Length: 306
Image (tube, rainbow, N blue to C red; front, side, top):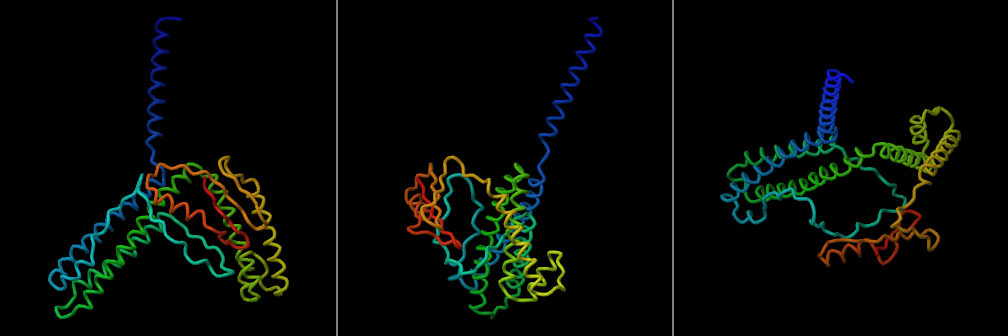
């Protein structure tokens, strides 16, 4: 090979390497859409935190003169702390739902987090206005209400902060495996549709039947008997779709699912932890290992840890 040609080939190879490296670095620097959107929400969250902190300072200054004894009922907004080795509180289960209660779906999204923040910002504006307009002779009840409203706002802030932190968790999982999320979302939609159909049929309410049929592209002018039969057929088709989608689901190797009795499922999972707080570990064990089965519809589930 001629020296000139060899040099040209080496230059071309070097240029190709530089281009591919630069392109790879550029691709690696691309911010996922959920991260960019989440940062927008976090900016609103910081503004919200700053505003509630300012209201705390203003209210504290007011109470130093108007009601010093009420200062003890206030506390600064807590820092947004999360991460490794921070243990949650283990609380008692709520009362079981009434028989016939259907499951609901709660959606989490950056848009919903923004909505929660907007509501609280509007509420803080009302509190600020109310505090600025407190007349000198308003009396203790007004100050007590302002303190109570502030404490309620702090409690809601904790829930909003948890909502945003949860968004970061699940949206990262979805970004890593969007096809899985889409498949599960399809199954969820089918479950909710079947649930709505079965509720309409069980209601024996002709108006409910017709509303449900209209949403399923059925002839809502047909007789109630025809609509009920058509909707029942649709529910059966959905049941087959759900069964087909969930039939292949298998537990991981470390978990065992047993059927010790009709209508009872025993989920046995080994648990390893580096948590050194023995009281917390025991409280957690008692929470997931109830002394009896927990009723969930027609089937009871018992969790066990090893």
